[in-house]
Image (cartoon, rainbow, N blue to C red; front, side, top):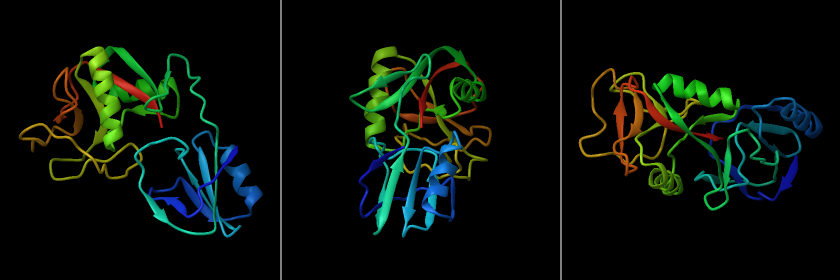
Length: 206
């Protein structure tokens, strides 16, 4: 793991784990978990692990804090078939074989346990998604599910999705439309979906 100066900053995201353990125990615990990519150590005794890193831009919101030390696993985009985009800082794979929504989710995780359908959670994510749409020109499934028409859309870790770019008259209130996709082959506008049609999709390492 590498040290990264995150003084006075701590992510406003649900942690993978937390506990009162020593610094060394915290590091060893995270290193033993493939899904743990970063940790915060507070006051030399409180350890919090996360399933994503904060070394690269990810549209994350931060809260002020103090006496925080941050460590992260070095990000290497070496999963077969994945490409590192240095401009937008994403490790991604565009799948050219269309799948239904749940099949697409499974395909991402089969590529790499850290891989998920692309999550639109910020303006920077929209910019990258538009780049992909311009390159390939297809409607894409996106990360995000809801239980029913009255429930919020959640990401793969159960957190509320804070950012949407809805198409006109969306989100549709149909009870079976519980997934997300882009509305057009040349746009990042979003709409709800039943996930039953075979569509292209974008996976990325979170």
